[in-house]
Length: 402
Image (cartoon, rainbow, N blue to C red):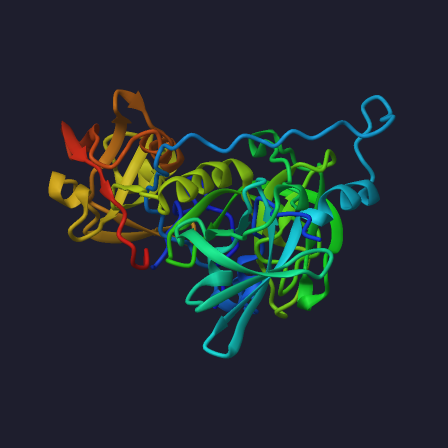
């Protein structure tokens, strides 16, 4: 089953995510996680009304990739973005088709794109997962064998490398996903069903979505789009009106197995950091706390008789995690509020590293600025007591997050 595409629930009526677990280009992002591997995401109807577990994650701090220089369009109108045709003509030479094989059998077909003149290509981890060999086809139908430089299952990203002359490559320039707004133009270029360099267009339907990575952890700040994505689009770029990459198409939400107008792209700002680390050292270390969290607000505080009406409720502490070793406590009993189940009796975190936290996003944001091995003080309410518990962050396990 493909990772779920539902957004993170909020507030008293909802648990904070609970998850069980002639060459022309090497573009910089790989899309449609479910799509490239030929798996449909499966909508809520297939999984039921559920929430997903959130585990705090952080990407190793490696200098992010710069955006390649790109000339301005010829004679642009003031304030006008490029047309879809202009975007396609600029960026399609940098989009590639990725095929993988196990033994003599082709296993997956996806997309990717060139990110630099050294031959690095970005794609999804799930496109190349378990492959014995990887090949890349360019816009002039030239095919090259590709080497896997590094993969990161936690963000569903992978970097490939081909040996090609720099002047034969068309790197795609990277944008800024923090500046993406709902309603912005969104253009996808990829290889749906193996159809070479197909363009589809729509809008940014939502931002700050959450999807599940192949290893079960959560990918944050995901871009939702109604640009059509299908099997084979995985790893391809999602572009804005200036032909800049804003995301890597990774998943769809679908009851039919095909495009239903709900696609998800890994944000380019995440891609920059992860890809830089993969190129530099071949891996990404994600600092790890190891808790499942829910947001505390006035309603849940009243129903559960919590000592505070704002903070982060620890639902569960993972065995062997840094949180367990530090002595954080999870819930011991369950209640249902507005149809959502909460585990009560655990610690309520109110401050992290001296900063107030009112939601799991607040806590995750603070931890995301740390490294594995950093000591982080957490102020918690445990019954009537206020305690300070210092956690030494670990490195996220490579196994499934669920």
